[in-house]
Every structure is written in structure tokens, then in C-alpha cells.
Length: 554
Ligand SMILES: Nc1ncnc2c1ncn2[C@@H]1O[C@H](COP(=O)(O)OP(=O)(O)OP(=O)(O)O)[C@@H](O)[C@H]1O
Image (cartoon, protein in one colour):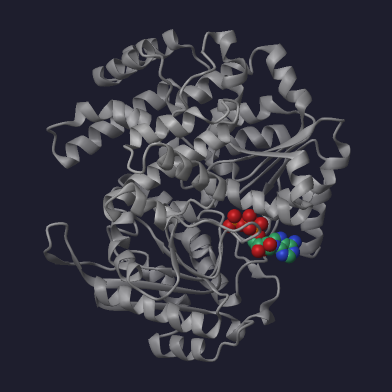
């Protein structure tokens, strides 16, 4: 069977519960969009399809695929795309009163819980603060992974948590505040009320779930209870890199296999060139995966390219990435280039070079790509006299959003968070607002030019070229990873970064970096250097020759 047959079989499968497991670039997200098209005629009047993703970036990616397959009008009419927190928030807003949760609750953001933890970290060393913070987060998450009410959560914390976790939870309950995990827990409880579950099951005639390996069993439960006519789950356990947020890929896969039977597989990459796949295969086979074949090996100049380069300093590495990006863009003005770093701290010298460069670049941590959200923020700033505090801006803008529109509220909160970081660097909210990039209607989420991002945000995305700087021990794998399971997850992070590339991948490292205190220190190459070395084919001269010979369409 050719793989296009496998792909079409998966798209058209009549299974009520369909599980598709496939490596990167084999068309899993595409499959969801095409399956949506086939499912629309099966919907009863007024039914919609619920498409669930894990993160906001993944939501934007699936949204744009759905628009390209269905057109904007049909997409809007028939599909609701939510991330899990958005979906949970909608359920809690609409039905929370059943459980005595007031519908006017303030939408939690990533900071709500962190702010409650912060006072307990004061005066501790960085290492102790990070360990305590992690312990509290684990306690709170573990106590809220089930459909428990507030009293049961406290009971669990008293039995298993440290005293700080109990105090934080007691204060949260007394103050009627919700954290992210409370949304999921309450939504789960609400969907256990038959009448409420029936409303969702009637409303959603099908459910599509991307990246199932990122789900916790709780999120899976929410998905399953939200729709039952037709359910499609796609994912890749080898791309499971979110265990620190509660994802349980092995358990979720086991539950899905029980529900759906054997999964369908796809084995051809529609994304990457032969050279990129050779490199990817060395890593994925090491992780227990199947080697991938390219769909059209002859479509790529020289079959694509891979390179591994070492620089004396982080500054030289950053300059090289900038200069090489400029050369690529001179040859191929429409090329998309991802500079994907394992961690934010390692990207600093690179961000600094691009901040003053003529090469068009976008920092994803600063990108609010929804014109509507930027407009809401701009209106808020104007209303508040041009120089508001963040708290005032937040209260003003969120207060004006329809309380049922949880996605907009979530997007605004994300945007404000980015704006705050940016304002610290830019000097004021006004200066920060000026740097936010507005995507025009119809503009691709990933436009031509350089994109500066971290590994986890790159999940599910793709670029013509990918640079992976910082191929050093302590960064790849991260120095925070301890023990076998965490190191294995870091190995999967490397696979995710490499597999974002279409045409070429360039791994780089610096022999010396500058510490926070401003002192140079030596680095050691990543322990996975031996594994990837045979598949890194070009030195810097060969790489530059390859770029020189590119034509605009390649
Ligand atoms: N059947 C197909 N025919 C042609 N191109 C396809 C097909 N399926 C997917 N593609 C293209 O291949 C690329 C990768 O597809 P997609 O992002 O859906 O893969 P994926 O399996 O979801 O990858 P990842 O696991 O990395 O998120 C996209 O550019 C997509 O448009």
C-alpha cells in the first residue's frame, strides 16, 4: 500500500473512535482538517465539530489548516477550535453555578498560581526557590488531576502535600480564585452531570484532538465526555515533551487503544527533504521509532542539507546565524527560517544580534498575531490615558470582553503577559505596543523571514530552514533534566526541534559562553553529538555553496 492510500484511508475511516499514530511531518494535522471536511455533512442541524489542541500556537496552526481546507466561512460555521483550558473555561462559565462556581470568575492565567507561590520563595537561593516552587506546583497539580471538589483537594493535600501547598490552596479557596488546574477539574466534574454532558454531546457531532501525547488523563476524560458520535485522536508518542505539565503519553495511549483498537499509522514525510530525514532518522530510531521516507525525494535541491558547526564564542555563532539567514533570504525571499533554541537563556546572544539586524525577524515570545487582540489593548491604553499600569490595563480590557468569550479573554491575558516582558526591555507600555506585530488577514502565521523561538513553542510548526544553536551539554539536554526519564524527554525535544525543518538543518555550538555575571566559561558538546554526526553532511563552505546555488523556488 502506498502511503497516500494510508493517508486517504485514515481520512475516510468510518471508525467512531479513530486513533492515528505517526511520526513528524506525515500529515496528522492535515488529516484532521480533511476529516473535518468529510464529517461536516454528517452533522445534525446546529451541530458543530470541536477541535481541541494543547497550546495556543497549536490552536493557531490547526485553525489555519482548517481555513485552508474548508474556507473561512465554513470553518467558522462548523468548527470550534479550543485549547483545553478554553474549552474547560467555557464549560465552567456556562454551568459552574451547578457546583457553586460563580460564572463571573476571573480567567486564570499562567501567573495566577505563580503569584500565589512567590511569597514562599522570598529569601531562598535560586536553586532552593526553584525546587520549592516545583514541589508546590507538583502537589497542587497532583491534587487537582481528578474530578474532586475543593474539600477533597484539601484532603489530598493534607495527606500528600507540603504545608506551603496546603496554605496556598486554603487561601485560593477562601479568596474564590481559580488556577488553571481548577478549571479543568471543575469542567470534569460538570461533565459528570448527565444533563450537562448531554448538552455538549448534542452540540458537538464530532471531536478532533491533535497531539494526544501532550494530554493528561484528565484532559482525555474531558475530550471523551464532550462528544461521542465521532472522535479522532492523532499524535506521536515520540514527540511527547510535556510531562512537566502533567502529560501522560503512555497512559493516554493505553486508554485510547482500549477505546479505538489498533491505531492507523502513516510512514511517509510530506514535510522534510531526504537529508533532513536521514538526520531525523538517526535520532528517532535511537528512540525506538521507525525510519521515515520522503514523499518526493527529487523535489529538493541536492536532496536538502544538514550541517553541524562549532564556533569559538556565542557571539560568533549568533553572527553566523544572522549572516547565513541573510544569504538564504537573498536567494529565497519567501523562505521561512526557524532559529529554535532549547531554552530562552541560550537564545539571548542570538536575539541581541537580530534586534539590530536588517534581516526580518520575529520573536515568537513577543508575537501577538491577532489584530483584534492588539486593537483591544490599544483601545485600553488610550482609554486609560496612554500610560496605564498593567493591572489597570488588564482589568479594563478583560472587563469589556463578553464573559462567554473565554478564548478572547485567554488570548488577551497571554498578550498582556508578553507585553509586560517587552515593556521592561522597551521602557514603556507604549514602546512595547509599537513592537507587537499584527498579522494581516490571510497572512500565513509563519511568514517569510527569521523566527526566533524555543523548542516547546515550535511543536507542530514547520520552517524551510532550521538552525538549532547551543548544541551543548547543559542546553541539549537541559541542565534541569535529572534521571533517565527526563533525559529521554530531552532526547525527544531534540527530535521535535529537528523535525520542524523542511529543506535544511544547521546545528551549531559555541565553545565559550558568557555567564550571567559576565564571565566567559567553556562548554562541552552535547552527548548526542556522536549519534547525529554521521548524518551532518556539510561543512560551512559546502553549506554556503549550497545556499549560493539555490533558486527562488527550491
Ligand atoms: N496527504 C498529504 N499530501 C501532501 N502534503 C501533505 C499531506 N499531508 C500533509 N501534507 C503537508 O505536509 C506537511 C506536514 O503535515 P502535518 O503538519 O499535518 O504533519 P504532522 O504529522 O501533523 O507533523 P507534526 O507531528 O510534526 O506536527 C504540511 O506542509 C502539510 O500541508
